[in-house]
Each structure stands twice: as structure tokens, then as C-alpha cells.
Length: 284
Image 1 (cartoon, one colour):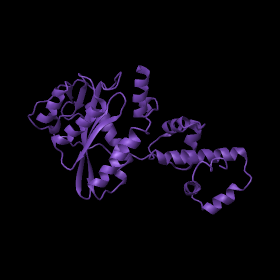
Image 2 (image 1 turned 120 degrees about the horizontal axis):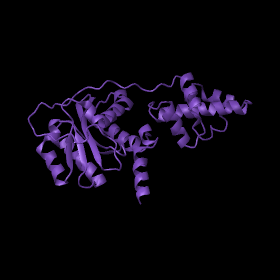
Image 3 (image 1 turned 180 degrees about the vertical axis):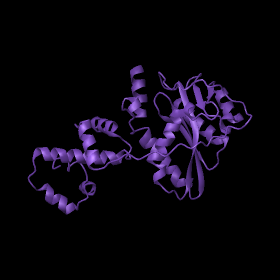
Image 4 (image 1 turned 90 degrees about the horizontal axis):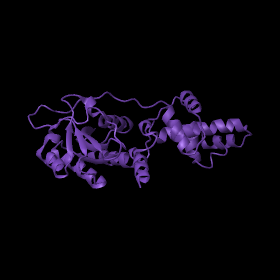
């Protein structure tokens, strides 16, 4: 602890330990064995990382995250500290079906058939719409996710669940990635994805449209998984007064946390951005 407190704000450490700043200084002046210092350091590292990762990492991911930061700590030590200090992960809420596929609009065949493993970026994207409640009313979010890097490539927020919502998100993803012809873009059968404007965009860029079977959420698991993460780690812990507040929070979460900092076990404990950077650096 005596070595670590120089690297972290003393008030943060005191708050984590639930002691006064003056009491912490008194404790630091005592003669403590190197072993106790080491254990105290590890306790602080784990508690800070637990908060930084929005209380979402289990033992394996948290220990991998700490090790990636140059901290020498074992999974056993992380597990012990989490148990002793009751550092539990936030729980996910149950999935709720919101797609209205009761229409007679044309639909695409299911090209993925629940095979979400890709060999390179921009081979297949998945997309969907979710909703966020605010005191001003519902806010709808559409997003496109790459199945190889797991990056959120494009997104759009609107108070109305209209075709423009998904078209704006697709435009952002295309602008950011400039994907090749033949890209598979997979969605459910919601009316927005069957709209004339959306289908025209796919045809213009020579993408392949793909759609889930009617009422089968497992056909679009990757983006449903992202909705669960977003709501579990962010949305369910806020009572948004305005749509603008929700928009700002969601954009920061996607751009600054999910894509840049949130490691994933399925990506060999890399972030989505690291996955993309590693692929293109190797390809070069």
C-alpha cells in the first residue's frame, strides 16, 4: 500500500477502504510487513478495476484486465478479494421481444443461420433496434456490430422508431468502415429493415441482406448480447430526465468504453478496437 498510494489519489483509496483520509495517513506511517503491503495493493487494484469496468467483470476477465495493465496478480487472488469484499457483477435483466414482424413487406433469406464466426472484419454485420426510457418518453437506438471485431461501427438515436433510424446508423457504419461489396448485413424482420429506403441502401452498396427467422431472437444473438451489456452496465442504473442526457451517456459508453476499453473473453481478452488494430497491423 505504501508503494501504491503514490500512484492513486489518496481520497479514492480512503473511499474504497471506507476510512478517513487522516486515518489512512496514520495507518500508512505504521510498520507493515511486505506481504501485508502486497495484499493491500492487490485489494486496491481489484476494487478500482471493478469500478472502472462498471462492475461487469468476473474473476477471469478482471484478472486478465489487471495483468494487461502490468499488474502481477493471479486469478486466485482476484477471486479471493472479490469474495471477501463482496464485489459482485451486475445482473442482467431478461430479454424482452419488441420486434414487430407482422407485415407483408419483402424479407431477406437468413444467410448466417446462427453461424457468427467470421475470419476478418467487414465480412458480416448484425443490427437491431432497442429502446431506452426517459422522463421525456422513449428513445430508440439502432446499431450495427461487426461479427469479427465486435465493434459497434455505427449507431443512431431517435425519439421515433422509423426507417431513418436504421438508415442513419448504417450510413455511419459505412462512412467509418468503407466495407467491400458482398458484405452480409443481418437483422430481424422489423418493418424498418424491410423499408424501401433501407433496402435501397443495401442495393446501392451491393451488400447482401440477411434476416432472422420470424420471432427467433437466437438468430441475432450478437447484437442482442450488446443490448444486454449496454442496459446492464449503463441504462438500468440511470433515471434519465431528458433524451439528450441519455444520448450523451450512450454515445460515451459506446465510443469511450465499449469499443476502446471493454475486454471480451471471446476476443482473447482484447477490446473490439484492439481486435481491429491487430488484424490490420498483421495484414499490413
